[in-house]
Image (tube, rainbow, N blue to C red; front, side, top):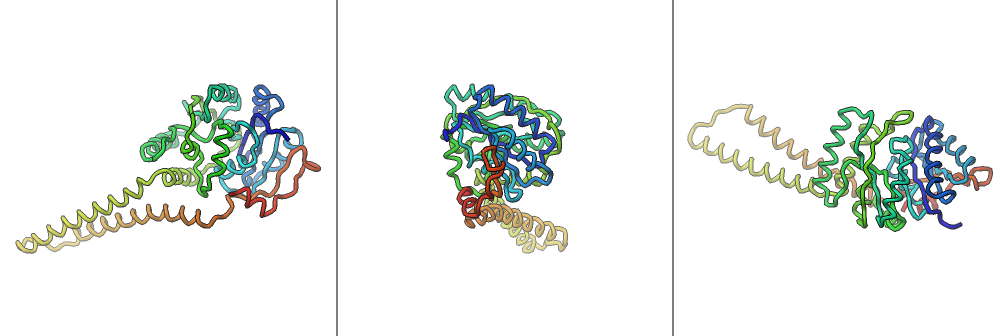
Length: 330
């Protein structure tokens, strides 16, 4: 089968309420750009509602839709990775199904790529219906990441982007277990540009990205693309050593001059200071060691239970075997 002009990779987690509207708008956008010459890969990331039956129904109805059902909830980044491994298009759009990133921007993304770019990423000009705390923490995080990362990662961007086949092949060849896709795409280089847009509120349902998941993604971004925290641990250790030397001199001078005053306050403060520095350094080192531990195990990135499309027998493809899933996850 000839490769389509466009592939759309859309991870889904508890998107039962809005999936039909997403498919309707996404198909309309694809038909306007590449009539019949596209595929839409809907990746069910272990949803707890009826998202997978909805995907199966959409795949049975629309010949351009392929559904992938992951064995469990692997997380957004690995769900996107699973879709990208199956994408056959010359260009690949990564978009969430919550409709915060409008499918209608596909035309503008394609036009920018026609100018010779390998990656066109959506940069958020505004974010509707976001609470002030989330906006403030996002603003701070993107600037912290930009300042610490050893590669230039665009600010105020998510994974909403259009990438060329060349970039996709390079991305699929990267073996990271803890994946921070927007940073990985930036690291790959090539001609990249932005498209400013206004992010819309969710069409339906609630976000599956909890505060804990956002912290995990933020930590993955910092530890994947910066060794500054490790150097910071060394600096804190050096600062602690200098402070210890200063305190030792102070204590010796006080002892020799007879001005030493016994007291638990200074002793408690010293103990708290050094204990805090040690724990901070151990925490930073632990984050990097944990990433090494996950990487050296060499487990598959994800497991696929089922793949469906209108071409499948009775609308259902045989479940993917463990060997096949392992090969897909490399």
